[in-house]
Length: 205
Image 1 (cartoon, rainbow, N blue to C red):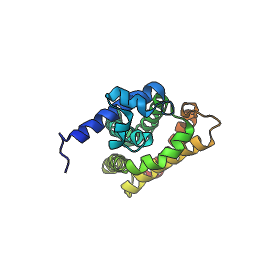
Image 2 (image 1 turned 90 degrees about the horizontal axis):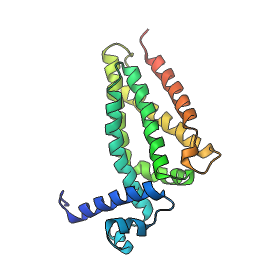
Image 3 (image 1 turned 120 degrees about the vertical axis):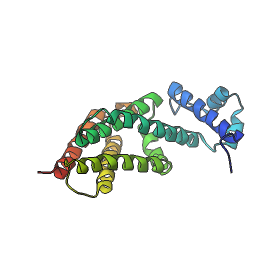
Image 4 (image 1 turned 90 degrees about the vertical axis):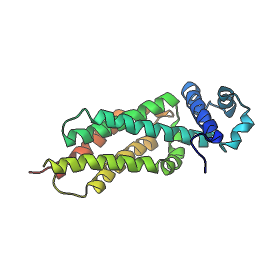
């Protein structure tokens, strides 16, 4: 079993960090394995000892972003006072983080749509963390009397599913090539509206 000081894991972290810088500088499409290898200080062919493709490196970068995203979202939510405002802030901040990430990496819509299923498979652990965190917020609302008794985890999962579905539809329907050109304002408006309807249905009379 690999330990925390395993050389292979350390090397993968170096590749991961180097790739993140390259993607941010050149965009996903224009970044080559040579670019990444040069930053790490190794030959491009040696990268295949750790990753089988640029897409695999990209998925690892996105997974790392997922960890940081959850930590950041939790700090954003902590600023709000009520459970409803915390849920709405969480959903809005989550979309904002995604928008900033796609802009930074200069990713095309095609890349987002094609890579999304693979990213989601690897990202399931972090999606589960998101569902758990959102569930805790809703349970807090039930406890203080803001929400009716409900299956909090199912509600949390539904809100995240709707958010991701609206976002993916916007990408699939966008009359643009770059992910940065997607109408994020429209996505935010629609997701916020649907989330408010869900929260209103949960509210105690």
